[in-house]
Image 1 (cartoon, rainbow, N blue to C red):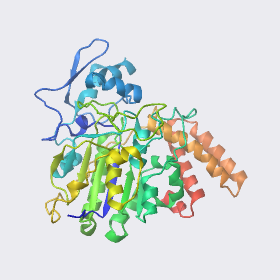
Image 2: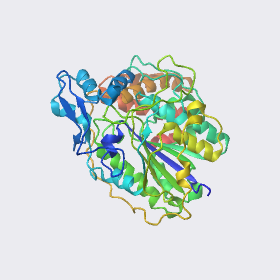
Image 3: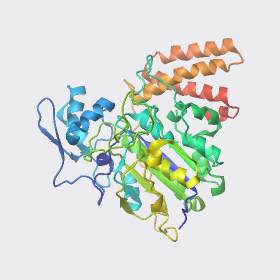
Image 4: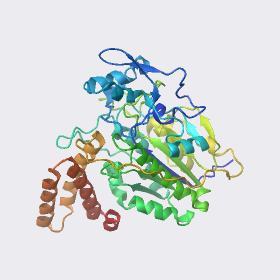
Amino acid sequence: MADPIEHVVVLMLENNSFDRMLGAIPGVDGVDPAHPQSNPDFPVPTPVLQAVTTERAMTPDPEHELDDILRQIDGPCTGFVTDFSQHYPQTLPAQRAEIMGYYARGFLGVLHKLAESFAVCDHWFSSLPGPTWPNRFFVHSGTSLGHVKMPNGVFHPNLHVYDQPTVYQRLSEQGVDWAIYFGDFPQSIVLTQQWLHLDRYHPMARFFEAAQGSADSFPQYSFIEPTYFGASQNDQHPPSDVVAGEALIAQVYNALRSNTELWQKTLLVILYDEHGGFYDHVPPGAAVPPDGNTDEFAFNLYGVRVPAVLISPWIDQQVIRDVFDHTSLLKYVTDKWGLGPLGARTASAQSFGKYLNTRATARTDTPGPLAVPAFTATPKATEANANQNSLVAFSRFLETSIASSATDIDQTLHDIGARLVKSMQDDGHHAEVAVERLGEFLKSRTSGAAAVAGS
């Protein structure tokens, strides 16, 4: 039977492991409350057991760079608490226990409802044992060009040129309509090939508008980036309220579900870029390296397991055991639309496409609109997380492009200087100015971007 999906929508959130978010769902390879897993504490190796948590805003933010993750998964998977304790020796036992915490069934009312109504992929791994940026590069292009580290701070960034072909380039080559919707600052814009398609970037309000229209006018492939900064942060990155991400998931699902014509042709994929330092009990396995650059890592090992849910009226409620990583999404869409190659990792990845062509008709029992939960605004940051710092660093780089496109160079240089002064006030202003820089960059590079940035 042919694949009935005409529209693929991907929402990628941040920094949570499978056990933490979906380990309590019946039938998955998750948490066994009768026999919880444990990790030794540090420096006294007292066992810290998996236990139910109700903490919605974890602090401090667990570390999850390459060296941290290799320690965490050693044993196997016995170094999570030790790594956290070594980074934060002043934390209390209850804080260290959060590394092993998991949400009880139903606590995450939105994610758990969708997981129990559709398909959970319980062996979906992040693409490498690394942080946000390289894993997000894999979901867009199948490679991070040999780089595994985050840019190193705001003023001394470890920035590289990421000019690899992307799935969006391939979609454009085949005439497949696509869009990226973002909350405040799309991380994917770091990929330089995206600069050829800035008219495809839209604020989240445009997603909800598009979802109300005809299915024929809705993009065939959509990628949603959450809000990474400020009081409205909803990416689920600690210490933001995890329920803010729940609200975003509900809003996206409801927008699709409420348009019957669109819903009947759509697959919504909920993903997380990486585990964020939180415990998962399934050791990652061997992976195919995507390219020849192994200066920072061999890329022959998956990262830690992350939540993944496939949502569509064309997929039955089930637990899918196949081993996937972020390039499995690329494998599905490249096969689906005949997009051509996106590197060795994508070519070797398993596709989930076979699970979407087993039904003769669409389901009629899928949940209706979900209640959108209220959440706590993220407090003003005293210290930015690694992704936020990296986006701020990249925004400083955008100033060079803004200057090069200026028609009034004196005014432009004055504005760049004013933004720099404003950014120096505190971390909150760094974020605010980064978003301002993005808006100015979009305005300088595409005629329609003024409306995009200001909507």
